[in-house]
Length: 356
Image (spheres, rainbow, N blue to C red):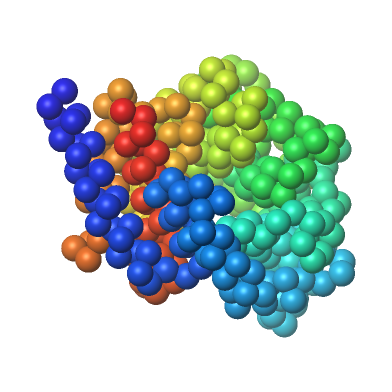
C-alpha cells in the first residue's frame, strides 16, 4: 500500500507542476481540455469560458471550417488526388482519411455538432457504409479495418449521431467481430492469410482471390489458432468506449485484458504496427496506436490502480515526462503537437489518480 500511495503522490505532484507550466503556454483548445479534464473546472467557470471563446477564433479551427466544402469534403493535394483517381474509387485515398482526421480535430477544438458543413462531412462517411455495417476505408484492398471503424465510431458519437440507425449498424459490426481471446483482427488479412496455400502468396494476389470469392472466411477452429491484433483490438475498444452502454460491458473486458497482457509486446501480425516500439512512441493525433492511447482507453473501461498491469503502464508514461514537465512527440518534436500529447498524458494521470 505504501508503494501505491507513493505513486499517487507522485502523480498528483506531476499534475500540479506540469499543469501550471502548460497553462502558461497552451493554445486555446489545449487549455480547455486542461481546465476541464485535469483541473476539474466547471464549464461555467470564467477561465473555461474565456478559453472556449478563444477556441472559436483559433486559426486552425477557423481554417478547417472555412475549407470544408458543401459536399462534406476537404481539398487535398494534387499528388494525393492523382493517387486517389488512379485507385478503385472512393473511399480509397486521402479524401476519406482527411474527413475522419479533420472531424476528429474539430471536436478536439470544441466545435459544436452542426457547425458549418460538418453534418455533410458525416453524411459523406455514411455514403461509404457497407451493407454489413462497417465503413469502407481508404485502403486499396477495401477490406474493413476494425481500428478505422472504431475511429469512425468515435467521430460519429462525438458529433452526436448515436441515435442514427446507421451508427447502430456500425456498432453491431464491431461487436460481432470480437474473437475468442477478446480481441479483433482485420478480416482475411489477419486470419485466412495464414493458411498454407496463402501465407507465401504476394498480398496483391491474395486480395484478388478474396475479392473474387475464392477465399473462404476463417473458421472458428482456425481462428482459435491465431491471436488477435493488438492495435485492431485497441481501435475497436476506443470506438466502443464512446457508447455509455458498452464502455464497461463485461463482455468487452477480455479485449482490455488482451491489450494489457500484451503491453510492450510485439504484435503477432506483421501488417499493422508490428514493432513493439509502437508502445513507447508518443504520436499525434493521439488516436494512432501507442501506449498513451492504450492507457487512456483502458481507464475508461474501468482498469485502474488495483491492477498491477496498469501500474506498470502508468509508470512508463511517467518516465516519458521530460525534466521541463512536458511530454514530446517521439518523431520530430513539435511545439503544438507536444502540447496535445502533454495534456492527454495529464488527463490520463488525473483520471488514474481519481480512481484510487
